Image (cartoon, rainbow, N blue to C red; front, side, top):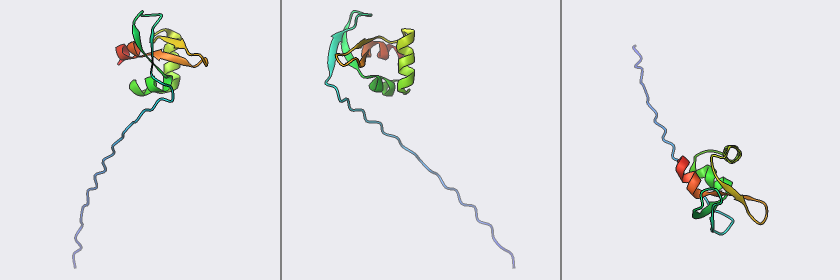
Length: 87
């Protein structure tokens, strides 16, 4: 008696959806670096837009690659105009 070998192919598809919600209200302000009135965003939202992480955003802030200002509670807010340029 001869056994028959069967070959099975399994395909797995993964999808990822990222939703961002800010706990702060939208803040529009004049960036002191680029002198443009723009939306100021949190470092977390900037990380999502750049498909990066918050640690990398702080590195970019320290290197001067993206602009920021500090909010009333000393939380840095990132200039969305400078983030858009990096995308």
